Image (cartoon, rainbow over all chains, first blue to last red; front, side, top):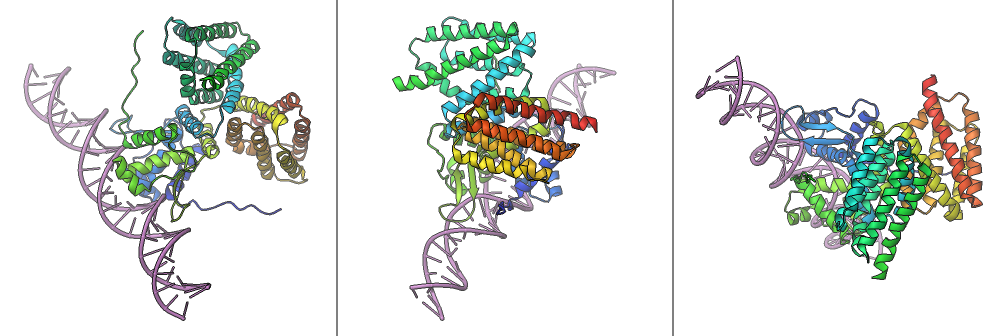
Length: 243
Length: 243
DNA sequence: CGGAGCATGTGGTCGGACCACAGAGCCGGT
DNA sequence: ACCGGCTCTGTGGTCCGACCACATGCTCCG
């Protein structure tokens, strides 16, 4: 069997810096909440220029493991954090816009993830979250609600359920996937024929979903949310085609 | 209802540059394969310094939508690409190391995603991919195979199935999630009592999985892979506890 | 006609300087 | 003794100009 050679280069210094910091994270030496030394100190320690260090820090910031703020005091400087959601959201949004993923792919992923979310929520969701979800559903049920506001609340509803399912990873993924199609859904909803009727139908789904989750009927909630999502994405596919 | 105010700042120029380039991507003006102007040209056009522009480009590079290489000719410069896998992998690996996600979360996510992968593969997988999977399984079946080599082949097997399921998004997610626990699985396998027996058991699973996929038995394959993954993660949880 | 060598353009790096901002600490008035 | 405002200091953020390494394209000489 021929040995496959990997490019071993990466002579770019900021990659090396990145690697070095990553190692510390993997080794457990850097944990969430820790502060990095000031850039002006760390750069010479690592033997690189401040620019190269900054580019590495920017990468970590993009990934959502670092935040930096200027100023002075305990909150200033670069800190290790755990904020994957924004990073993942931006990643999927951009790649979706670039056509890395088809709408069908996103649909299937949403179905799979949200089925799991609702099943988890039916088992573990704390009452506070369900009360909050109730408020969101009520907000969506307001007569004369705009498409944009509805879309926002709908996103928050699905993300909230995902978060309350007790699984941080599927929650992050669900939220990111939902966010990535947010503009698309918005445009689709704007093109819908009878918007009030559509909103009523979606709201009926939401209300039933919430009831099912409250009474712990996981599988039923999963089936319904699958139907709910497939229906919505169906209008996404057909809507623009009809116009 | 009180209006919730969002922080509107982000006066950091590289954020603005990033936003500007993102807009072009969302608007479809920048597509995969397009080349960006040289940094020295683009920076003054955007009215920012080269450093700020570079930090924005670095962000895009970590997201996997941009690659840059020096030199001259048609391949040089910064190009828009679609390579989400590495980016997502690094993201999940780091956050897993930081404890954003528990092992249980990853387990459930893997189950959900890979069930979908195998069901999709049973329907759409091209024969070439299955032949390649066959080779990987054969590789894992070699007597006396090391833990590390086995882990590599196992990763490639699961990722290959995910890719052949026809869904780029779940494939990316599956691959990233599998990658994120790769070092953990490696350590767990190293601690296993009777490694040859474990390898044989896992291989039996793989062989059956492949057969089920070949004959289009999606649901059965999904059930088996769920059992397969839960079993492996079970040793992950118990192994370190026992030692 | 062909190959060696130079010119050019690209990203990558570096060092230094300055800016804006927010806390820390001082200093004065009350 | 307290409190308010002022200044000082340290942080990230930005900018500029220069240089480096490298790959390509061109030229010039054999």
